[in-house]
Every structure is written in structure tokens, then in C-alpha cells.
Amino acid sequence: MLQRRSFLKAAGVAGLTSAAGCLGGGGGGSDSVKIGAVMALSGPFARTGEENERGLRVAEEYLGGEILDNEFELIVEDNESDPNTSIQAARTLVEDEDVDAIIGPVSSGNSIAVMQYIKEEGQVPHLMTTASSVDARENPENCNEYGFFIWPSNRHLAPTGTQFIQELPNHIDRDIDPSRVHYVSQDYALGQNGLELVEEAMSEVGGEVTGSTLVPLGETDWSSYISEISNSEADVVTGVLTWGAAAQLIPQANSFGLPEEKVMMFNSGKPIGQFAASTMPDEVTVDGWFGTHFYNPGLDTEVNNEFQSIYNELDSSLLPNSTAGASFELMRALATVIEDSGSTATDDIISGLEGLEWDSVFGPVQFREEDHQAALNFFGGRRVAGDGDTPEVEVLAEYPDVIPDARCSL
Image 1 (cartoon, rainbow, N blue to C red):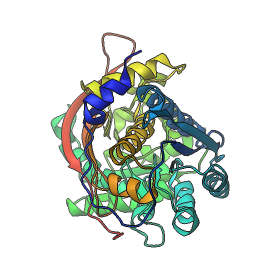
Image 2: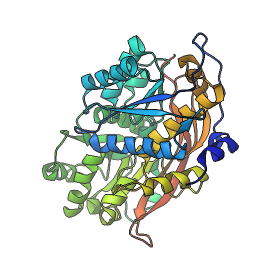
Image 3: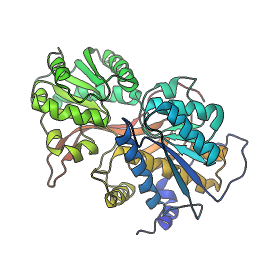
Image 4: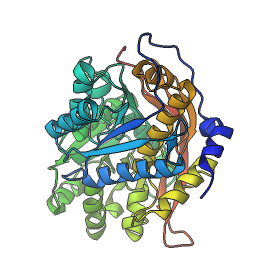
């Protein structure tokens, strides 16, 4: 095992630096650290929740199991992919376990439920993993000084994806009109919000969304929806998908020959992400599939190489991925600010996280002080056959420091 504690100290916790003022108030620190996690280990978001938890386990190994020269305790509660259960899990962690901070949960709806509890009662640092709707970050009833977001919102994704779509004619050998797209997603908050923002982003470049297909959560037979997509007026299909939806759509779309008719370009890692590469390597290299993402597995940095090495030592059929990377980086961020201040007091952790900049598995990241969103580097690309069993990412366009305007003042 690498001497990770020595590595962290020598590198300033692998390149993390803090730049913010104190919120004021708050007590002194403690040399015993307890981190709570609300994870979806059952229910429709379980696959994502399992990877979130796996990222936390990678972080435990990376940190050598210690913060402030003592073993820290990681307490995980299953929220069953349900908002009410999420609140109860957070309440248990704060009121019964007395945790110093909470990581999670997975979806936007579950995260917002916990945000409201934290804002009104829990009042501990709350670092969300994969919540991506804008409601959590923009609705004044939800956004608060305790919440931090490492995952991009739909307001990160829609303009970046739209820009990449406009550049697609430079990267394919067929004639397409990038000004007209058909939107596909699942019929819940993420997909509905994504549709509104893609419509807005396309309008800004003089284009339009000619139609949309919103599929019920849990749908496994996409045949009728694929026919609807095939009959659309647009040359390009875009949208956002959960892992489960991508696993259903991609092979079925290929069997119907849809990527031969339409250029398929999805945001947030589908189909170019590590999940797709590990579960359907032949399907994602079919001509016609493109995507935007903020995690490039080929990023050759010390922290990404270490993250991948530890991940691959675990019992997983998947590849190191952005979902595990998000929770991994949130643990690193917490460890950094606690180490820097020598304190687990809420005000000390929050003031340390505000403005925090670090070299992450995603490249350079910063929590913007104004609203606690993360600035991330994105790229557009596709999967191509590699030398081994895993298809490689071909990066076609890069978009650094992507972050939307702040719309919620803390």
C-alpha cells in the first residue's frame, strides 16, 4: 500500500488549497471525525448509489483511513431512492450519530429533501454527489450555505452539449443540420428541466428543439419510443439519461439502426462514460454515438492514476467512473479543510470549502464561493475501439472552466 498519509501531507492533500473567509461563530475542532453518507443502495437509483459508496471506499483507502492523524468513521445510510427516507437517513446521521458532515444523496429530488432538512434543522456541511437539476441551486427555498455541488447541473450541460452539436459536422462524414434536434430523456425532474434548458440553449444559437420523447422511469422496452425518435424531423438526437436508461436505449437503438439515421449525442457521460464502456463496449463504438462529459479516464495525473488503481482493486465489474469520482473528491475536499483548520466545527468546514481549489480526477475544480457550485472542464467525444477490451475515449472538443452564472445568493 502506498503511504497515502505522507503523500497527502507532502502534496498539500494532493494539490488542494483553501481561499475563503470564515463565516463566524462555531466552536472549536475535534480530533475525532465522523462522516455521514446518504446513499441510494436500493430502489431505482441503486446503481448510481452503489458507485457513490464505492467512491467513498476508494477515498478511505486513499486517505489511509485517517483524518487529523486519527481513524475517521464513515457511516452510510440507505435512503431507498426515496425523499422521505432520505430525510430520515439524514436525521439519523445528524441527531443520533452526530456526524460532522453529510455526503449525498444521489438524485436531485432526494437531495433537495435533505437540503431542506439541513437548512432548517440539521445545519451541518452537506456535499451532494450527483444532483443535477437547477432547482437545488437556484430556488431560494432550497439553496443554502450548508450545501456544496461537485456534479454539474443541467445549466452546465445544456449549453456545452449544444455547442458540441454545432461542431459535430466537423467530426462526421455525413451531412446533418445541427440547428434542429430531438430531445430524449426520462420523464422526471432531470429530464424535464433538461428539455427546458436545451430549448433555451438551442434558441440562443439560432436553432430549435423540433420534438421531445420523455420516457417513464423504469421503462425497459424502448421500441415504440425509438420509432417516435426515428420519425422526428431532426438529424440530431440529444438529451440526458440515467445509467439504467442508457443501458436500455443504446443496444435497442443499435438493433433498430437508429444511429445510422440520426446522430446520437447525449450529455453527462452517456454513451461515452465508463459505465457504458464497461457494460456494452461493442454497442458504444457503433458509428453515430457521441457525448459530452467532465471525466476523461485518460487524464494522466497522479490523483486520477491513484483513484483508478485503488478502484480497480475493489470488487467491481465496472470501470473507474465519474459517479465514484464525485464522492471520492468530496471526501478529499472534506479531509483537506478539516486538516487545514484542525477543526470539525461546521463554520470552519464551510469557510474552508468556500473557494476551495484542487487538482481532482476531473482536472482542476473549484467550489465557487458565491453559490458553492463547481467549475469543471468538459469535453465532447466518442468511444472508439482500443487495443484492449475497453473502448477508448476519443476527445474531439474541449470546454474548460464550465460553470453557469450564479442565480442564488447565499
